[in-house]
Amino acid sequence: MKNSKKGISLIVLVITIIVVIILAAAVIISLQNNNPMSEANKARYSSDAANMQAVLVNAIGKAMAFNEEVITIHESSVGENGVAKEIPASDQVSFTLGSSATATSVGVIKFAKGENSTTTPTAQIWYTGKALPKYGGKGTWYIDGAANLKLTVSGTSYGPGAE
Picture 1 (cartoon, rainbow, N blue to C red):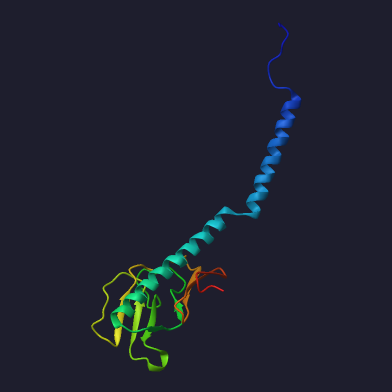
Picture 2: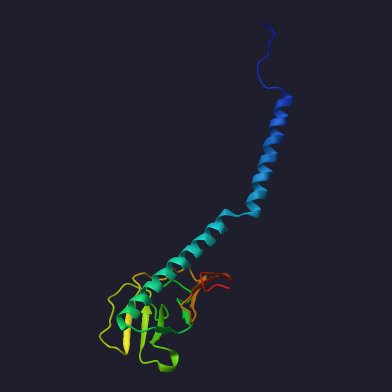
């Protein structure tokens, strides 16, 4: 076997290159149709909306248990666009005790850390213990009368209040 040649033949090399090109094209097409970064952002927004809904329901439950009465949530925008350095006034939900026809007092639930203030029955302040996530001016939070918290980012809505 003095004349045996070691190495790769030209045919094997061409076939290998063609297979690599086909695999690369399949990966590129797959990433264009199913962008993992946008899917990760959607999952983050959905998770944040669900977490903040649970935090809000907990605070509403505390306010209802303290007052021994059902509260009525006022529809409004919550957590306007932008990144907050302090607790903005918009990061709160207002409510009244009882049905809207027999409303007796007004209170707020703030998305921040703080001590609950229940000493004044006409101006109760409840804290969720957690701030609303901010998305650099891309997201807006909204609450409806059924206490469903909805996050809208770039025209897409997330959360139980989403349409």
